[in-house]
Length: 234
Image (cartoon, rainbow, N blue to C red; front, side):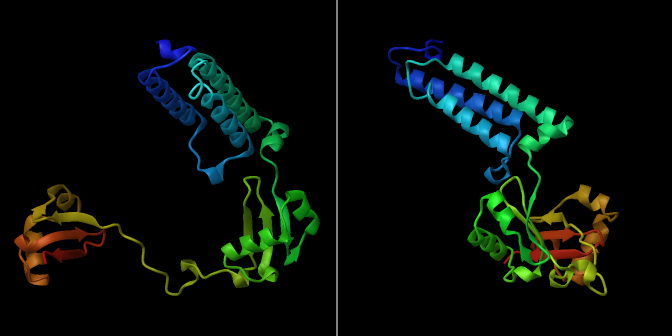
């Protein structure tokens, strides 16, 4: 365990062991903190990520520093982070420190310039976010909010919102996930049983409806409506 403490010099193997231990410890820390993408990092997450990255970087690049002190420091930082998360869930005043309320940037088609300065973003950034949402006209926007995560939520007036399935008449048929019934000439009898059919029905479907034999089938799927789709070898 000489690689764990500070040394005047480390061998290549000791450097590698430090990297392995540091990597595994960071994975454990990330699991405890919860996995998020960069765009999902909250203010507290960002601060802790900067601290942990800086703490672990030094012993992994300086042989004179030991891993033990860095790992203890990171453990304390993560404990403080988890405590902060739980406290923010229970006490609204603490929650407001870490999760600031959204700032309205556009209301009823009008830009709130004072709130742009409060959010520290420019009109150009606002227009760029609107373009990402395929919105070319500010007057189509009923409400746009600057969220604490650093992104903008945009809500259009109802007449400018895109059509959804609920607007269609008649409504769309429900989606049925197809299950693999035959793959490379082999029948999945468990799927066949769950579908309420037997091998005799399958052979009959293949020969009478699709005019093929089982030996010609590369893939066959069945959905909840008992529709059989067949794909043949070329």
